[in-house]
Amino acid sequence: MDANERALEEVTAGLRTGRVVPYLGPGMLALAGGPPVPASPLELVATITAKASVPHKIRQRLTQAAQFIENFKHRKTLVARMDEAFTTVPEPGALHRAIARFAPPLVVDTWYDDTMRAALAATLDGGEWGELQGLSQSEHFGTWTRAYDAAGRALDAPDPDWRTVLYRPMGGRRPASNYLVSDADFVEVLTEIDIQTPIPPVVQALRSGRGFLFLGCRFDDQLWRAFARQVTKRSSARHWAVLPDPLTRMEARFLAEQSIGRIEAPLPEVARALAQAVPA
Image (tube, rainbow, N blue to C red; front, side, top):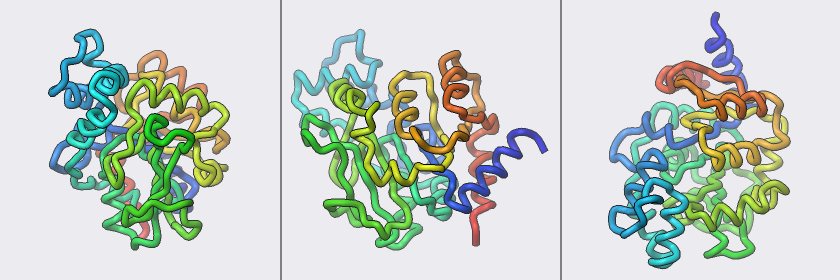
């Protein structure tokens, strides 16, 4: 048995017992069916700037381009562009469905599509799950997150009876078009995240003692490293990331610093292994 197989066995055992938290990035969309939505920051910035005159030097920088649109076209225009980009919901892939069937206590989804949400809705009863979404301070000053039940109704607090909490720190298209995407959005959150203010208490409680499994994530950008570092804070000392492609120097350093073991198998291979391991 090689290192990848041993890691997958460990991850599978953790998912079965609820001791592993799936942490999803935009790369998960490679396993989803149509219709397509932007599946990377580059694809998303191209989409939201297609109808806006944005300076050339920031046209490939998502948070800066979003900030320009917000400043010169209004926040409502930025939200409308994001809504257009993620109007459709891709068909959940085998890995989305497997995660939903494992029904871990916590799933973290760091992209804006509603694919994982759809997988949970198709798998669990309505009272078994709900979600928490990050909120932009420009629209909800002083409130960092909002809870929603499976029907999309806003709640004052998460339901303690939820079997699975879907945590979407960047927000999402549904149910209420909440997005953290502009420079200002992230500056507000990152100013407070080191002391954990934007991380919901239920997420802080559920991550305790649990390892994280990073799927469809890259850590070649400081922003994504910062969020992963803070969301996993005070959790287990052992995590895993499916990263078959060569790492950048900063990614390799980040994995070492955060005790993240690398699984070098392709994501579709991991999806097949986990799908086969779901309890009947």
